[in-house]
Length: 196
Image (cartoon, rainbow, N blue to C red; front, side, top):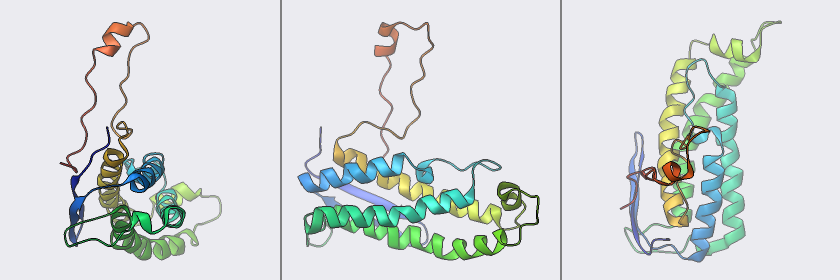
């Protein structure tokens, strides 16, 4: 069931919170679904564990979000970013604020530094091996994890607005021998606390 009106709060490290009242209309609900799908199917909301995955891949995935949000905003037009009163938010306000205040600073800081490090890779060393020998890789991964938490909050809000199932939480794994009855008795995964 889609909510009529929500209180939204997303915490952006070092900046504070963005939030307020949101009464999404049909266009905002459809836009929320589109961005929700993009977020939950990318590296952006999955933890990038040490020695796993690629920081370059994660940065690239974050970069692609700009084009995705831009396309969604153009497709739905000003309906998803209506002028509001103080303490009200919209799809456009949330999406653009998270991109400009959370994603952009991480990309601006780390993309050029990682590119410079990548260019120094010795012959015969894989990109992943070289990346993991960088003295700054721990700090980059920490920033990516902080950003992941912001995007996770945004995804939870968007999923709620879209009226979608929680596609972020851990999947319910049922042993092959389990009966349909035991599967049906499992409680749904809890939603995040981002929306009240």
